[in-house]
Length: 326
Image (cartoon, rainbow, N blue to C red; front, side, top):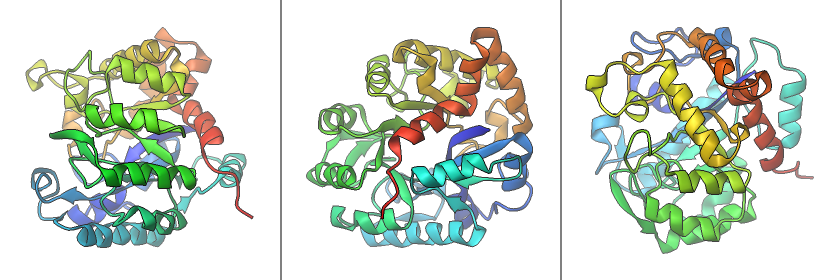
């Protein structure tokens, strides 16, 4: 089973009209049929809302200016996932049930909120958890909770309160898009499971959007996970270097594996249906993930390659998802 830890499915459908159940829209590669053909059996679908101050370049007019607008957009996205009939895994029992019955043609998700502004107040987190949210990233760009991409800064008082609420609900923290200062302030506070769902190596491609080796090492010490993004700007320094390749993906896998101390902390978080077309990614079809497995086998054992393609995320979720509630 291949696992992809970051796909903006609902945003693409509601903001851009790229529905999930049909074949991929021209220029893109992700849809349910495409994922199933490629052998992807588990995804992290997102609730992603772009703030108006930073979002128009990526999201067009589908942006928010207030917490209430972010909330309404987030609820529309959870409604979209319900309309798809996509099974959302809420606890370890759900995970084991999906794994035990899995075959090609079955797909489930672990719901991830990218940017926490849809949570109007930390006291409302329980309602989102009841809707299936199991992973929360505090930022995309700056939110009321944290500095983020393009708009650095630390945690706010609300951000500290939200981390405490997440700990009580046994949710997972996603560091992707959080500004470096916010990461450095969050990690001493946060004792629960932690990931970076789609963040590559800063030493290979500089920029605060990437993760520094020291942060990767800390995630490794905590048993966390890192997902490799397939966005061209995350894989190569400049567009003038040409289209990124799957070899670039392997380079970031290797760097993260060394920084984290083991390849068991690395997986995929492609973001392949995010704010970029397939032409600025390493693949034209999701079936090319089979070629990535072959390239990984040149540098890793079969067990490690299988882990990177999916088993590592599964092992992490077995540890990190909550036990079933009575």
